[in-house]
Image 1 (cartoon, one colour):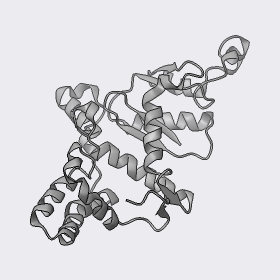
Image 2 (spheres, helix red, strand yellow; image 1 turned 90 degrees about the vertical axis):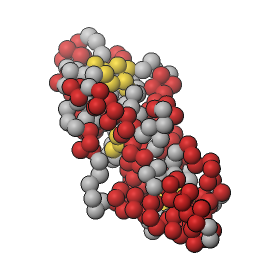
Image 3 (tube, one colour; image 1 turned 90 degrees about the horizontal axis):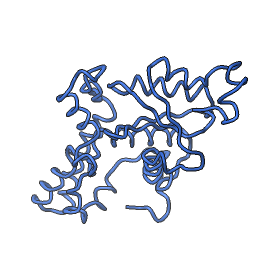
Image 4 (cartoon, one colour; image 1 turned 120 degrees about the vertical axis):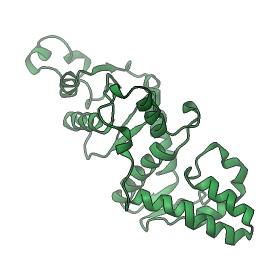
Length: 244
C-alpha cells in the first residue's frame, strides 16, 4: 500500500500495488499529482527502493551511467523538490506513519477479511470518509476537504482545478452512505430508544459528520445500537473483542 498525505490539509491518497518497486513508486507519484487539486512543491519520502537509490549509488559512475532514480525523474518533470528522511529515523516522516497507523486501526486491526479485495474496498472507503467527513482538531474541527475549499476561497491561483469537483457524484457508494447515516440509522435509533429527542440528537450527530466529530461524546451511549445497524460487506467480519 502506498500512502500520501498533505502536511497542511491532511488530505490523503492511497493506492494498492502488488509490488513496491521503482515503477510502482513513480506511477503512484504521478497519480498523486493528478489527484491533488493544487500544485505540489515538495515531497518527503523514506529511503525505500521505490523512492530512492541506495546511498552508494546516488553519486559517482553508477549515477552517471544509470541516471537519476525514476521517482526523481517524475519529480523533475513536475518541478517538485524530493527530500529524503534520515535512514533509520521513521519519525521524521511522522504524518505518513501516523496515518498508516490510523488506517490499520480502523481496518486490519478491527476486522477480518476473507479476501484482499474486501480489505482494499474497506481501506479506500475509510480514506474517502476521512477526507470528506472526518473533523480534525489540527484543522480547527474542519475536514481535510473543507480546509482545501477554504484555501481555494482565499487564493484560487495556487489550484489546478476547482476542489469542489472532488465531491463524489450522485448514485455512488459515498452518496448511499450519507443517505443511510442521515436518514435510516437515526430512524432506527429512534425506534430502539423510543425518544424523539434522541432521534433529533442522533440525526444531527450522524448527518453530515458521519459520527466522527468532537460532539460524539454527547451521544456516545447510542453508538452501540447504531453500529449494530450498519451494513457490513459479506467479506468483512469483526475480530473477537472488537464488537461495538
